[in-house]
Amino acid sequence: MPSPCTALIFQLSGCLVDFGARTLPVALQRLHPECTPPNLVGTPHQTLDAWLGKPATAAQLQALQQTLSEVAGEHAELTPGAAQLLQTLHANGTPCAWLDDLPADSSLRLAEALPTPIEAVLARQARPWPAPDSCWQALSQLEVERLDGCIVVSGNPLLLQAGLNAGCWTIGLAACGPLCGYALADWQALGASDQEHLRAEATLQLYRLGVHSVVDHLGEIEASLDDIGVRRSKGEKP
Image (cartoon, rainbow, N blue to C red):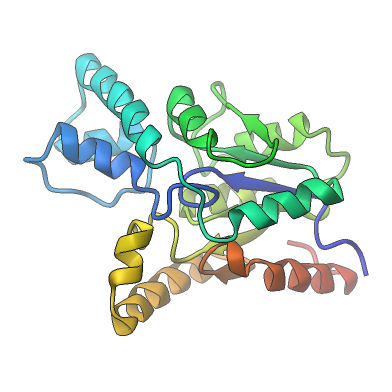
């Protein structure tokens, strides 16, 4: 059977760090508490426009970028299972990289929590997700020679769609990404029935997208990696 993966591409927020992908919504709430929160899946610029209900000004965009950097420092905490997984991948020599749609300075603040070296992909010239550009850029930076066995891991439907568009396998994270949107302590404080309802809705949305496997967080990813390895051994393509 082939190795479960050739390379792994992770989203940074809501995947490796910042359970619930709270950096962007918290920054928006601090800047514009009077506004009604929209669906928070999109670039910071797109989300700010939706939050305000009109195009943001240059000053509002600059204020958001500054606040994002401040909030990122508060949310630079690893998600469950992230440290062990990254250490295992590093020990095995598996190429891996992270990318995000937050501004570079905010992403780098979040990345300070990572315990092992991992390639940073700051795709400034890439089209926004779901375009596949940033996924291909990540694989290029990793000097991956073949697309077969490359996996994108995220809780963000737009990045997962980008991974599918790039021809990669995909693993969705239901509980720790923006679809549930709870910080870890708040998630753990929910009742079991509330957790299950939110998890089921997020899982269904990700499978409808065409994601190959869905788990709650990185602490549960091993079975998904093994499953992809089995499917590849049978000749299945993403």
